[in-house]
Length: 181
Ligand SMILES: Cc1cc2nc3c(=O)[nH]c(=O)nc-3n(C[C@H](O)[C@H](O)[C@H](O)COP(=O)(O)O)c2cc1C
Image (cartoon, rainbow, N blue to C red):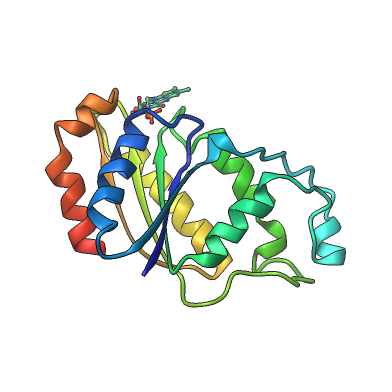
């Protein structure tokens, strides 16, 4: 299976990156795994111009095109997102907005992901209550729904301040690799 691991933050070497590093290591022997960090891509804001509602295509050309190519190549897409102010990081929200050409809400959609892809998400935060993480998981599930990605499952880690907290919970991360793939 081709699995795309998406770090939804701007930071490669943090706790989110550590989750994906552990997962990638566990999955690589059996699967074709590709990892990307949204911070490495230029993702311009959607300006709400609705060009894509008329033409089917976004008026902007930037890193979103490359991200979509990686998504198109994958059978499964796993988004890992830290809580930033109780929500997904701005990089991922910018990507969601820019997915409007590909969404089933677009009346003139000409481009979309091939059907049959499966979606997963992991949310993490420093605080202890799960509600914030559940909100992030529901945002990813909502995006999956409009992108034709079959939402499968989500998991979260509370009480995470940095990558060392994930290293201490490595077994829980590895259990997700077993459970999902
Ligand atoms: C801008 C910013 C906002 C944050 N907001 C929250 C928050 O609202 N609730 C929370 O529990 N943690 C919050 N955090 C903490 C992160 O969710 C946590 O440190 C996470 O492990 C960061 O992952 P990273 O190391 O991959 O960046 C915030 C961190 C940053 C940088």
